[in-house]
Amino acid sequence: MDFYEVLEKRRTCRDFSDREVSDEILKKVIDAAFKAPTNDHLRQLEFIVVRGRESITKVIAPLAKNMAAFRKLVFEVDESDDKDKMAMFADALPKQQKMLMESGLLIIPFFRQKTHPLLRPAEQSSLNYFASAWCALENMLLAAANEGLGAAFHIPVSDEAGKIKEIVNAPEGYEFICLLTIGYPAENAHICKQKEIRTEDRIHKNVW
Image (cartoon, rainbow, N blue to C red; front, side, top):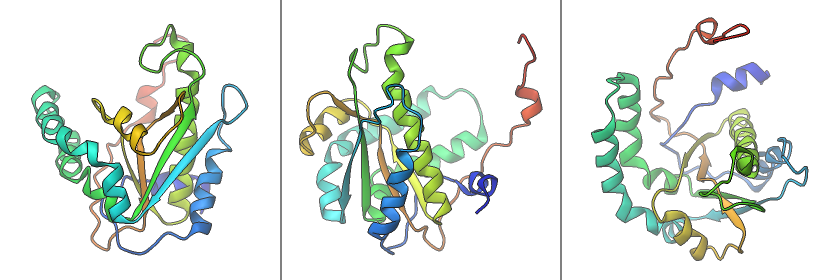
């Protein structure tokens, strides 16, 4: 696809078919991560790939007890009255565990956090490794879209990250940014409406 067509095609998908993603296409998606800019030029990214619903269920077990509380919190604190946003939440929240298992393919992208603890940065530049990892993830999302795949991710809340790192035996000093699932969209996959932004209204010349 043309690059700008890929940008248009990239959408969050939470409903997957049972069609398996081949190792060849999976490698293409992960290869794309190493093309992203990194602050240390070392591209210290590692990926745990989990296949099969039984194996995925074991990895994401820590999500179960947090989900009900998380769903309640989101609806309690939102005061924006944004219908598009709330429609997205209405689709997303019940599917947080289901979407990670449906495709049968879970990717956990790890990066090496060399300096300050991730959740206790000393300054903005302390987040350089974290920012680089998200650049890599964006490349993966675009590569997946180019291959006709849908993707969705879950960012860990509460104690999920620590527990999942124990389950997958992640080494000290490595953090993961999300749980990412990619797969072929189901025939009736729900795609949330993307908010339309008039770019010209968001551009400020010289000063705000």
